[in-house]
Image 1 (cartoon, rainbow, N blue to C red):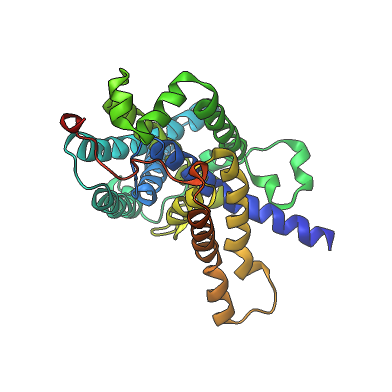
Image 2: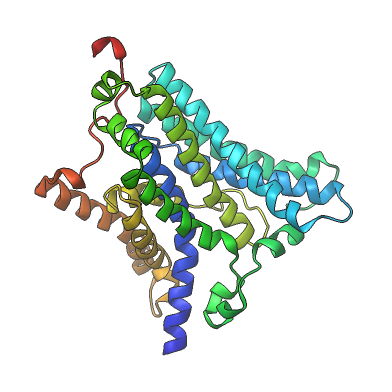
Length: 323
Protein backbone atom coordinates (compact mmCIF):
# COMPACT_ATOMS: atom_id res chain seq x y z
CA UNK A 1 0.00 0.00 0.00
CA UNK A 2 2.79 2.40 0.94
CA UNK A 3 4.64 1.63 -2.28
CA UNK A 4 1.46 2.39 -4.23
CA UNK A 5 1.06 5.76 -2.50
CA UNK A 6 4.72 6.66 -3.06
CA UNK A 7 4.41 5.68 -6.71
CA UNK A 8 1.28 7.81 -7.18
CA UNK A 9 2.73 10.85 -5.38
CA UNK A 10 5.97 10.58 -7.36
CA UNK A 11 4.07 10.39 -10.64
CA UNK A 12 1.92 13.37 -9.62
CA UNK A 13 5.02 15.47 -8.87
CA UNK A 14 6.54 14.56 -12.23
CA UNK A 15 3.34 15.66 -13.96
CA UNK A 16 3.21 18.82 -11.84
CA UNK A 17 6.62 20.24 -12.80
CA UNK A 18 5.85 21.40 -16.39
CA UNK A 19 2.56 22.80 -15.07
CA UNK A 20 4.42 24.72 -12.36
CA UNK A 21 6.85 26.23 -14.87
CA UNK A 22 3.98 27.35 -17.08
CA UNK A 23 1.89 28.68 -14.18
CA UNK A 24 4.77 30.59 -12.57
CA UNK A 25 5.68 32.21 -15.87
CA UNK A 26 2.08 33.17 -16.57
CA UNK A 27 1.62 34.63 -13.07
CA UNK A 28 4.61 36.92 -13.60
CA UNK A 29 3.21 37.89 -16.99
CA UNK A 30 -0.32 38.53 -15.75
CA UNK A 31 0.92 40.64 -12.85
CA UNK A 32 1.84 43.23 -15.49
CA UNK A 33 -1.68 43.19 -16.92
CA UNK A 34 -0.80 41.05 -19.95
CA UNK A 35 -3.04 38.01 -20.45
CA UNK A 36 -0.83 35.68 -22.46
CA UNK A 37 -2.91 32.78 -23.79
CA UNK A 38 0.08 31.81 -25.90
CA UNK A 39 1.62 29.85 -23.00
CA UNK A 40 0.90 26.44 -24.63
CA UNK A 41 2.73 27.55 -27.78
CA UNK A 42 5.55 29.10 -25.75
CA UNK A 43 6.04 25.83 -23.85
CA UNK A 44 6.22 24.04 -27.21
CA UNK A 45 8.73 26.61 -28.40
CA UNK A 46 10.87 26.12 -25.31
CA UNK A 47 10.80 22.37 -25.80
CA UNK A 48 11.67 22.36 -29.49
CA UNK A 49 14.33 25.06 -29.09
CA UNK A 50 16.05 22.94 -26.45
CA UNK A 51 15.74 19.88 -28.68
CA UNK A 52 17.25 21.63 -31.71
CA UNK A 53 20.13 23.05 -29.66
CA UNK A 54 20.89 19.68 -28.05
CA UNK A 55 20.51 17.74 -31.31
CA UNK A 56 22.87 20.00 -33.23
CA UNK A 57 25.45 19.83 -30.44
CA UNK A 58 25.24 16.03 -30.17
CA UNK A 59 25.31 15.71 -33.96
CA UNK A 60 28.38 17.85 -34.65
CA UNK A 61 30.40 17.18 -31.48
CA UNK A 62 32.19 13.85 -31.32
CA UNK A 63 32.82 14.07 -27.56
CA UNK A 64 30.09 16.23 -25.96
CA UNK A 65 30.99 18.11 -22.80
CA UNK A 66 28.70 17.47 -19.82
CA UNK A 67 28.38 21.16 -18.93
CA UNK A 68 27.54 22.13 -22.50
CA UNK A 69 25.00 19.29 -22.71
CA UNK A 70 23.12 21.15 -19.99
CA UNK A 71 23.77 24.75 -20.99
CA UNK A 72 23.11 24.60 -24.74
CA UNK A 73 19.54 23.20 -24.59
CA UNK A 74 18.80 25.28 -21.48
CA UNK A 75 19.84 28.54 -23.13
CA UNK A 76 18.17 27.52 -26.39
CA UNK A 77 14.88 26.90 -24.58
CA UNK A 78 15.09 30.22 -22.73
CA UNK A 79 15.88 32.18 -25.89
CA UNK A 80 13.26 30.46 -28.05
CA UNK A 81 10.42 30.95 -25.58
CA UNK A 82 11.54 34.51 -24.77
CA UNK A 83 11.56 35.34 -28.49
CA UNK A 84 7.97 34.18 -28.90
CA UNK A 85 7.03 36.20 -25.81
CA UNK A 86 8.78 39.22 -27.31
CA UNK A 87 6.59 38.91 -30.41
CA UNK A 88 3.54 38.82 -28.16
CA UNK A 89 4.76 41.92 -26.30
CA UNK A 90 5.41 43.85 -29.48
CA UNK A 91 1.95 43.06 -30.82
CA UNK A 92 0.02 43.78 -27.62
CA UNK A 93 2.09 46.47 -25.89
CA UNK A 94 3.46 48.47 -28.82
CA UNK A 95 0.79 47.82 -31.45
CA UNK A 96 -2.07 47.47 -28.90
CA UNK A 97 -3.38 44.29 -30.54
CA UNK A 98 -6.09 42.28 -28.82
CA UNK A 99 -4.38 40.14 -26.19
CA UNK A 100 -6.74 37.18 -26.44
CA UNK A 101 -6.44 36.87 -30.22
CA UNK A 102 -2.67 37.39 -30.15
CA UNK A 103 -2.17 34.74 -27.49
CA UNK A 104 -4.26 32.17 -29.32
CA UNK A 105 -2.42 32.91 -32.56
CA UNK A 106 0.94 32.40 -30.84
CA UNK A 107 -0.25 29.09 -29.41
CA UNK A 108 -1.04 27.86 -32.91
CA UNK A 109 2.26 29.26 -34.20
CA UNK A 110 4.35 27.73 -31.41
CA UNK A 111 2.77 24.30 -31.77
CA UNK A 112 3.26 24.46 -35.53
CA UNK A 113 6.93 25.42 -35.20
CA UNK A 114 7.47 22.59 -32.72
CA UNK A 115 5.81 19.99 -34.91
CA UNK A 116 7.65 21.18 -38.02
CA UNK A 117 11.17 21.11 -36.59
CA UNK A 118 10.43 18.07 -34.43
CA UNK A 119 9.49 16.13 -37.52
CA UNK A 120 12.09 17.51 -39.94
CA UNK A 121 15.31 18.36 -38.08
CA UNK A 122 16.58 14.79 -38.48
CA UNK A 123 15.84 14.78 -42.22
CA UNK A 124 17.39 18.21 -42.72
CA UNK A 125 20.72 16.82 -41.48
CA UNK A 126 20.53 13.83 -43.79
CA UNK A 127 19.55 11.24 -41.21
CA UNK A 128 16.49 9.07 -40.75
CA UNK A 129 14.25 8.23 -37.82
CA UNK A 130 13.01 10.47 -35.00
CA UNK A 131 14.80 12.85 -32.67
CA UNK A 132 16.68 10.99 -29.93
CA UNK A 133 18.91 12.76 -27.41
CA UNK A 134 20.30 10.01 -25.15
CA UNK A 135 23.43 11.87 -24.00
CA UNK A 136 21.61 15.10 -23.14
CA UNK A 137 18.68 13.32 -21.48
CA UNK A 138 21.05 11.23 -19.34
CA UNK A 139 22.65 14.40 -17.96
CA UNK A 140 19.31 16.10 -17.33
CA UNK A 141 17.94 13.02 -15.54
CA UNK A 142 20.89 12.85 -13.14
CA UNK A 143 19.44 13.03 -9.63
CA UNK A 144 20.50 12.89 -5.99
CA UNK A 145 21.23 9.40 -4.58
CA UNK A 146 18.68 9.71 -1.77
CA UNK A 147 15.86 10.11 -4.32
CA UNK A 148 16.14 6.41 -5.25
CA UNK A 149 13.62 5.67 -2.49
CA UNK A 150 10.93 7.87 -4.06
CA UNK A 151 9.67 5.86 -7.00
CA UNK A 152 9.77 7.61 -10.37
CA UNK A 153 11.54 10.63 -8.84
CA UNK A 154 14.72 8.55 -8.89
CA UNK A 155 15.00 9.40 -12.59
CA UNK A 156 14.23 13.12 -12.36
CA UNK A 157 16.98 15.73 -12.45
CA UNK A 158 17.65 19.31 -11.45
CA UNK A 159 14.78 20.87 -13.43
CA UNK A 160 12.37 19.52 -10.81
CA UNK A 161 14.07 21.47 -8.02
CA UNK A 162 14.61 24.51 -10.23
CA UNK A 163 10.84 24.80 -10.81
CA UNK A 164 10.19 25.04 -7.06
CA UNK A 165 13.08 27.47 -6.55
CA UNK A 166 11.79 29.75 -9.32
CA UNK A 167 8.26 29.73 -7.86
CA UNK A 168 9.59 30.68 -4.40
CA UNK A 169 11.83 33.35 -5.95
CA UNK A 170 8.82 34.75 -7.83
CA UNK A 171 6.88 34.93 -4.54
CA UNK A 172 9.68 36.87 -2.85
CA UNK A 173 10.17 39.11 -5.89
CA UNK A 174 6.50 40.08 -6.18
CA UNK A 175 5.94 40.71 -2.49
CA UNK A 176 9.26 41.81 -1.02
CA UNK A 177 11.07 43.87 -3.67
CA UNK A 178 10.48 47.36 -5.00
CA UNK A 179 10.61 46.15 -8.60
CA UNK A 180 8.02 43.48 -7.84
CA UNK A 181 5.71 46.00 -6.21
CA UNK A 182 6.13 48.30 -9.22
CA UNK A 183 5.18 45.40 -11.48
CA UNK A 184 2.03 44.75 -9.47
CA UNK A 185 1.20 48.46 -9.65
CA UNK A 186 1.49 48.33 -13.45
CA UNK A 187 -0.97 45.45 -13.55
CA UNK A 188 -3.44 47.04 -11.16
CA UNK A 189 -3.42 50.68 -12.32
CA UNK A 190 -1.05 51.41 -15.21
CA UNK A 191 -2.10 55.06 -15.44
CA UNK A 192 -1.29 55.63 -11.75
CA UNK A 193 1.99 53.76 -12.10
CA UNK A 194 2.86 55.86 -15.15
CA UNK A 195 2.10 59.06 -13.26
CA UNK A 196 4.43 57.86 -10.48
CA UNK A 197 7.29 57.59 -12.97
CA UNK A 198 7.16 53.84 -13.64
CA UNK A 199 7.85 52.87 -17.25
CA UNK A 200 4.74 50.80 -17.95
CA UNK A 201 5.80 49.44 -21.34
CA UNK A 202 9.20 48.36 -20.06
CA UNK A 203 7.65 46.42 -17.18
CA UNK A 204 5.16 44.76 -19.50
CA UNK A 205 7.86 43.76 -21.96
CA UNK A 206 10.26 42.40 -19.34
CA UNK A 207 7.68 40.55 -17.27
CA UNK A 208 6.15 38.93 -20.36
CA UNK A 209 9.50 37.84 -21.80
CA UNK A 210 10.83 36.58 -18.46
CA UNK A 211 7.54 34.83 -17.72
CA UNK A 212 7.58 33.25 -21.17
CA UNK A 213 11.16 32.06 -20.70
CA UNK A 214 10.18 30.39 -17.42
CA UNK A 215 7.21 28.72 -19.09
CA UNK A 216 9.51 27.49 -21.85
CA UNK A 217 11.49 25.53 -19.26
CA UNK A 218 8.36 23.46 -18.77
CA UNK A 219 8.65 22.32 -22.37
CA UNK A 220 12.34 21.53 -21.90
CA UNK A 221 11.57 19.50 -18.77
CA UNK A 222 8.92 17.52 -20.61
CA UNK A 223 11.32 16.57 -23.40
CA UNK A 224 14.47 15.91 -21.38
CA UNK A 225 13.05 14.38 -18.20
CA UNK A 226 9.58 13.09 -18.97
CA UNK A 227 10.17 11.59 -22.43
CA UNK A 228 13.87 10.86 -22.00
CA UNK A 229 15.12 13.07 -24.81
CA UNK A 230 12.72 12.02 -27.55
CA UNK A 231 10.38 14.38 -29.38
CA UNK A 232 6.79 13.48 -30.26
CA UNK A 233 4.59 15.88 -32.22
CA UNK A 234 1.64 17.10 -30.13
CA UNK A 235 3.10 15.16 -27.20
CA UNK A 236 2.49 17.95 -24.68
CA UNK A 237 -1.25 17.44 -24.76
CA UNK A 238 -3.21 20.11 -22.90
CA UNK A 239 -0.55 20.86 -20.29
CA UNK A 240 -0.18 24.45 -21.46
CA UNK A 241 -3.88 25.12 -20.95
CA UNK A 242 -3.74 23.43 -17.54
CA UNK A 243 -0.92 25.80 -16.58
CA UNK A 244 -3.17 28.77 -17.41
CA UNK A 245 -5.99 27.19 -15.40
CA UNK A 246 -3.63 26.77 -12.43
CA UNK A 247 -3.03 30.53 -12.39
CA UNK A 248 -6.72 31.02 -11.64
CA UNK A 249 -6.83 28.11 -9.21
CA UNK A 250 -3.77 29.53 -7.38
CA UNK A 251 -5.36 33.00 -7.21
CA UNK A 252 -2.34 34.55 -8.96
CA UNK A 253 -0.04 33.57 -6.06
CA UNK A 254 3.24 31.71 -6.79
CA UNK A 255 3.13 29.94 -3.42
CA UNK A 256 -0.31 28.53 -4.19
CA UNK A 257 0.88 27.56 -7.66
CA UNK A 258 3.24 24.96 -6.17
CA UNK A 259 0.40 23.19 -4.34
CA UNK A 260 -2.05 23.71 -7.19
CA UNK A 261 0.35 22.18 -9.72
CA UNK A 262 0.66 19.08 -7.56
CA UNK A 263 -3.14 18.81 -7.25
CA UNK A 264 -3.57 19.18 -10.99
CA UNK A 265 -0.76 16.70 -11.61
CA UNK A 266 -2.49 14.17 -9.35
CA UNK A 267 -5.81 14.71 -11.12
CA UNK A 268 -4.13 14.53 -14.54
CA UNK A 269 -2.84 11.00 -13.95
CA UNK A 270 -5.80 9.74 -11.92
CA UNK A 271 -7.37 8.24 -15.04
CA UNK A 272 -4.22 6.14 -15.52
CA UNK A 273 -3.34 5.27 -11.94
CA UNK A 274 -6.77 4.48 -10.50
CA UNK A 275 -7.73 0.83 -11.13
CA UNK A 276 -10.99 -0.46 -12.58
CA UNK A 277 -11.95 2.58 -14.64
CA UNK A 278 -13.85 2.30 -17.90
CA UNK A 279 -13.24 4.49 -20.93
CA UNK A 280 -16.07 6.90 -20.06
CA UNK A 281 -14.91 7.12 -16.43
CA UNK A 282 -11.43 8.10 -17.58
CA UNK A 283 -12.80 10.87 -19.76
CA UNK A 284 -14.80 12.25 -16.83
CA UNK A 285 -11.75 12.21 -14.58
CA UNK A 286 -9.77 14.08 -17.23
CA UNK A 287 -12.30 16.89 -16.85
CA UNK A 288 -11.68 17.27 -13.10
CA UNK A 289 -8.90 19.90 -13.28
CA UNK A 290 -11.10 22.19 -15.38
CA UNK A 291 -14.18 21.57 -13.24
CA UNK A 292 -12.20 22.39 -10.09
CA UNK A 293 -10.91 25.59 -11.72
CA UNK A 294 -14.43 26.69 -12.61
CA UNK A 295 -15.62 26.02 -9.05
CA UNK A 296 -12.73 28.02 -7.58
CA UNK A 297 -13.41 30.87 -10.02
CA UNK A 298 -17.08 30.97 -9.02
CA UNK A 299 -16.28 30.91 -5.28
CA UNK A 300 -13.60 33.63 -5.45
CA UNK A 301 -15.79 35.82 -7.65
CA UNK A 302 -18.73 35.47 -5.28
CA UNK A 303 -16.63 36.35 -2.22
CA UNK A 304 -15.33 39.47 -4.00
CA UNK A 305 -12.13 39.71 -1.99
CA UNK A 306 -9.72 41.96 -3.85
CA UNK A 307 -6.66 39.90 -2.95
CA UNK A 308 -8.22 36.90 -4.71
CA UNK A 309 -9.00 38.73 -7.93
CA UNK A 310 -6.84 39.08 -11.04
CA UNK A 311 -4.91 42.31 -11.71
CA UNK A 312 -7.34 45.15 -12.44
CA UNK A 313 -6.02 45.86 -15.94
CA UNK A 314 -5.55 42.22 -16.98
CA UNK A 315 -6.17 41.80 -20.69
CA UNK A 316 -6.48 45.53 -21.34
CA UNK A 317 -4.13 47.60 -23.47
CA UNK A 318 -2.75 50.78 -21.88
CA UNK A 319 -3.16 53.99 -23.86
CA UNK A 320 -1.07 56.69 -22.27
CA UNK A 321 -2.99 59.53 -23.91
CA UNK A 322 -6.10 58.47 -21.97
CA UNK A 323 -4.35 58.93 -18.66
